[in-house]
Amino acid sequence: MKIKIRVIPKASRNKLEKLENDSYKAYLTVPPIDGKANDALIRLLSKEFHIAKTSIKIIRGERSKNKIIEIPD
Image (cartoon, rainbow, N blue to C red; front, side, top):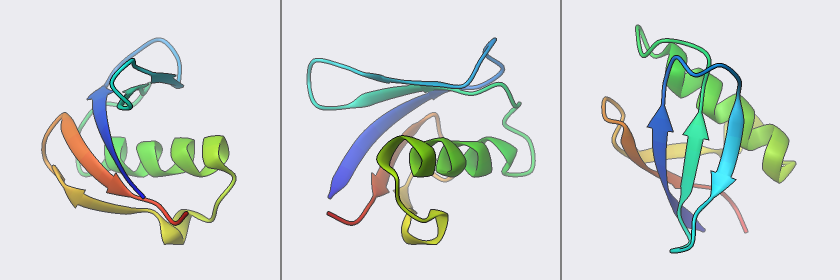
């Protein structure tokens, strides 16, 4: 399954919010430096969807706030 995520770095807490158009908004406490935000996003998705971190892949948007993530069904 592929999902669209808008990442908001340097937020006050880690939180995943589902939007109306089947996309998500991820609030992360870490800054977008040296891939820290991507790592935090993968940890958050792993916890929310109850899947292994290694099975989550960033398909598009490695260096962007708008990302497409692939997670297994």
